[in-house]
Image 1: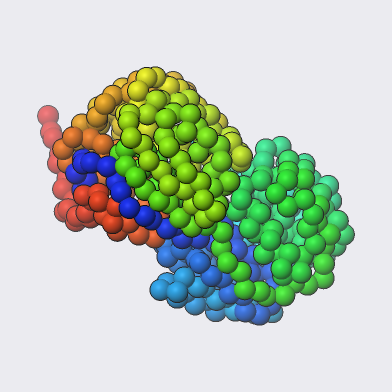
Image 2: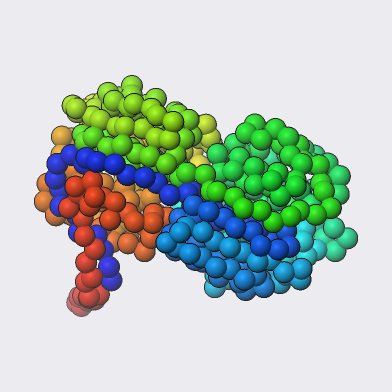
Length: 429
Ligand code: UD1
């Protein structure tokens, strides 16, 4: 078993540049299925989830090459595609569900295993299914697979999403661009990664209006053509480094993303006493003195992103004063809070609220992270804990951050990976 070994230390200083967004790259890879021929994506992060999506596309009949040193992925899409996404791959990564829309509209049928992925709440698929049903597909569950059938093709329709789900918006959008007629998606999610997907679809020849807003109007076209597209910068990875700098009271230039994609988060941090200088492609974060704790309520974009909630917990655990963190998107996403308590944080969880009273420093302990962001947040917590913290879950971080510990070390952190043998202790009597 591998884990991070983190020595608590001083401020992080230096510069870090984020790669393209995981949550965009995976969907853009799925969108490539919509056009026969070679699509090239640039600035693709070198993470395990990209390798999983590449393998999924290969099994559907595509030829996929990933040059991790250049950050490019080329996807050659054949005329005839397979339409089954197996459980083996889908359970490794929930984003596999984003092939559902493209396959349904391209093949007239799609069978996608019901995914696993991050251990954060129940994460239903009803909105994906309802959306495709509105477009004329017959959607049902069959032996662990979500099956969508539309042998005569999909037909545009008005769709009002009950909740602005990122994944459902993307699936419906990717299906609607090749459906007959016009589709209006109301209450669409507005995350920047959806804007990136829509931008690529438009370059491919799709007709989409309202990009960036909560109403998308799509006029279906007969076919799309392959393109070259650069993945948008990863705002969540950028947010991770912003919190790392603030927490350690460091001085870090975070590049490679659009500050407006983190607008609300940056405003909160400024109010808390963190100094943030915005530039075109990033921000400089300094934090000369102990910041004040702030309340957080996770919401769809442009609200506070749920993916940064674990970092807000760590921030509030060492900031001055008390704060309440409310998780509105994923009900079981407070695992970080209980692990933070092991590190000496004063934190109480009640339902989807966590109440924190800041302490000057935490105290090192062995902890376990349950998903990509939880592990990253616990490593950052280790940086502000006295002693040596070990964090299990390196595999989660590798799903979402290309060089997490390498980047941390470049900023002056004492973080290494270590392999430990699994030991089972049993007691009797
Ligand atoms: C995406 C991101 C994830 C982020 C989340 C919210 C990817 C690969 N993942 O996940 O990192 O945390 O957006 O910003 O892009 N829901 C339903 N039924 C559905 C769909 C969703 O009940 O059919 C619920 C989910 O259980 C959850 C909420 O809606 O409570 C948000 O889910 P959604 O926006 O769809 O997130 P994902 O696309 O899964």
